[in-house]
Image (cartoon, rainbow, N blue to C red; front, side):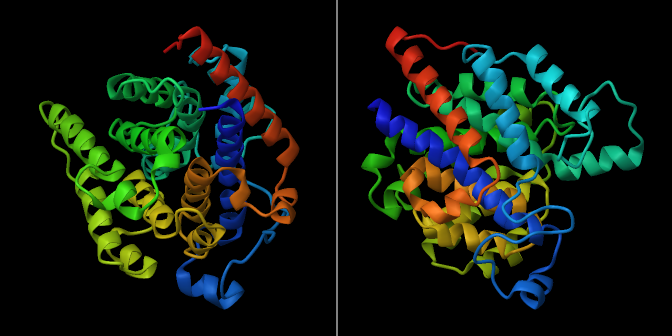
Length: 336
């Protein structure tokens, strides 16, 4: 992959994340009916309370902080630097994520429950690693290990790491192979499609997990259900009715993939995700990130792009990450 294409996809991923997050921000926590009463349909950026139109939430902030960490660490995962940046942001009152994250804090039962429900928000922290890993195409075991390391300060639900892996793996595959993916069959429907391979990997991991603990709600089953509904050309609203739209990673990740696969290269898929309410900032954000990995930056019109908070800084971070990825590819090195 040439450096220009790689940079375009990196910019598309991170700016797509911020774009979807900002579009989903005002509808977060609302029911579809409440969204309809207030907006009918999300077709751009809206403010909410003290947040200006185009502002992103902790979903994007966490990913950008991890970008800074990985650049500072020359592309490796550095938990010490990452923890320091997260804690510093929290101490200064600049954080936008909704839940406490560091295990050093005392947590009440109520807080622990909320963290478990909110863990999808922290999956975005793994996206920078998906970008850096895409040129070298590391094996699934290495990618899963990386997601586990990145997520270790973020979630008390160990199974959420598999959901983080799913988004990270798909992002990597889209960046690496999307030029050859010309149809929905190649993305989702054929026996050897990207989603079919992801389901097989998740099943293998779940078999290992179940040797120690029972899994009540399996990601592989949810992904298979998502794939079937895409094949049947079911509506987004129908899939939400089956899958749910909460902050639980087990719901938010399949829904993000469904929104992407229903649109694949169009900003409308991001707007549709933002209109759902519920976990809209995460789902629309991840949908935007996946579309950006697939299509590059061009799917976001320039006027929309310019309305995203800090778009210049996000573009610069994307360029620095792509430059780092190209350097590591030339040297045939990558550090876990």
